[in-house]
Amino acid sequence: MLSIQADNPVIELKSLVKKYGDFTAVDYLSLNVYPGEIFGLLGPNGAGKTTTILMMLGLTEPTSGSVKVCGIDSTRNPMQVKRKVGYMPDDVGFYEDRSAFDNLMYTSGLNRIPPKEGRERALRLLERVGLAEAAHKRVGTFSRGMRQRLGLADVLIKQPEVIILDEPTLGIDPEGVRELLALIEELSRKEGLTVLLSSHHLHQVQQICDRVGLFVRGKLIASGDIDTLSRQLDGAPAHRIELDVATAAEPIEDSIRGMEGVLSVTRKETERLASSQGEAAPVTLVVTSHSDLTAELADFVVRQGVRIHGLRPHRYGLDDIYHRYFEGGETRERMG
Image (cartoon, rainbow, N blue to C red; front, top):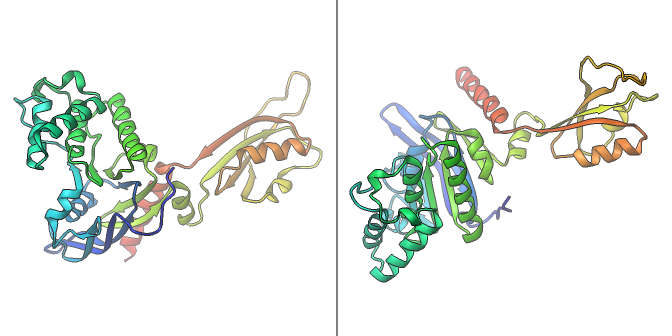
């Protein structure tokens, strides 16, 4: 994953609020996204993600707070922001009776790119997103996945500094999702593009994002990488390792507890049969930690002269973290 620099954010939101009458769509949102980062804005439908994106683009004004993209105030200078940002909504609009190439050339013209250069960029991007063979086919014949890949080419043709993708995988089959996410990650890693990806799909966000912001009912309730989010969540561990060990004369649990980074060691209640050689059934220990200690734990146990029968590392994912945050968020709102 990318090493994030703590200065000069590409996207900078400070105490951002958007109200529609008595309804608060975005509630004092503060957030930074840094150069070359893939940031996932994760939350259920209706959480306020799209409203936040519209404020970033200067397409709707905040009730209060400030938003800067590439150092430019989006509210005061929306046209300057649009020159530097590529935006792909959840449903990209194209001229259905025109080809993929024609649609890209139209976008190129709108951005005042010279025709020869626009043609070169369009053909290069169609190759990049896997649509070279469909370049001259009518977009009306495209599948949802093909349209989304064309949408990605469409936002890239003006060579933006940052791209904002609103639910880019919506309605795409699993293989299409995998290909699109791989393409987004490749573009960011190889070309240094900053990406803000809005989604309600936990596992898709987890696959490619450097950091994630959890957005619930207009509030950013936590942000960070997976390990950081786990630590913020009431000290919850990020990693769990199940370790099957032979019964030792001296229980090894206390020794493992003394290892640096280990949070807890407990025995898992399981029914295991003794081996055919008459050996005692192995004991299953559950070890939790903030970082991955799988290799260190295995080495430590072997050096203690204890035989390992099985080792099953498990990392807490966004699914675990998000649902616990979401439940906590609902609880805090009810209490408030």
